[in-house]
Image 1 (cartoon, rainbow over the protein chains, first blue to last red):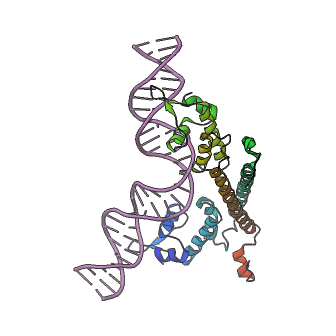
Image 2: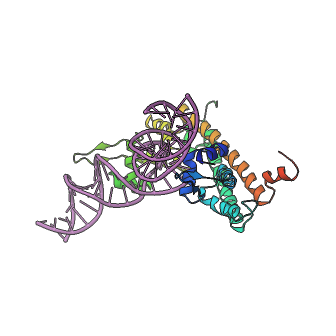
Image 3: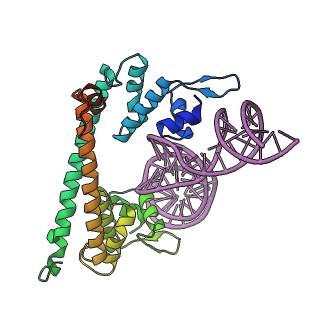
Length: 127
Length: 127
DNA sequence: CTTGACCTTGACGCTGACGTCAACGTCTAT
DNA sequence: ATAGACGTTGACGTCAGCGTCAAGGTCAAG
């Protein structure tokens, strides 16, 4: 199939597919007229990339997963490199969650009127 | 004081201060030679901006707080516009936390080998 | 007079994952 | 032969908050 069909079936833009190729994530053989030609396996690769992006992975993070699929594994997450990325990502997400929780607490405290500068206004009503 | 001193005292770069001015957050009177001149109140404004940025606010979010301080209030969060931003931010943070938690769950599931895509292949389970 | 620390405006660089032209070639149908 | 639906490469635009030059003006000290 050509790039337009792959794009439609994968639910991405052709621009994205060319970008993935430029970043070395996917490759395409070329037909005589220079058009990119893809197979079913490529649809699989793109789907993997998309689902990884959807959970917050970068394209760089997705590389070992794509390599794993290309190496013939059933799942992109079956290889040790992929597992390492999973672990790292999990740690990153946990970090972000912790950060957000402490930010939330700070903002909530401010909103609750415990702001140190609000003492002058404290004698009245809250909304 | 001039821009360099304000920058040192506020712990920011001069570039940042000029950027804040360009964005309309702070202003400076000019001395005869064209140099920016700041007062103590400006240090207060910049500190407010910095602490807001530190908890994930954008410069745009910081505007009502700065306006509030300039209007003579003790705290930048004392004005209704600021409170509105607090509330909106709180909702945004909660959204992000929810998103991250669901991502975390997905990634953890993958890492545990219970990938949802594989479940369909095994038994037909869905969540 | 010259160094050097300070200031000015202007403008490009950076990060990620593309969107959106531009300008052009290819193939099919009418 | 011509429209138009597809493909190609190249390159700039987007979002935020600045960093980092470039090229120069100002001012006090030695």
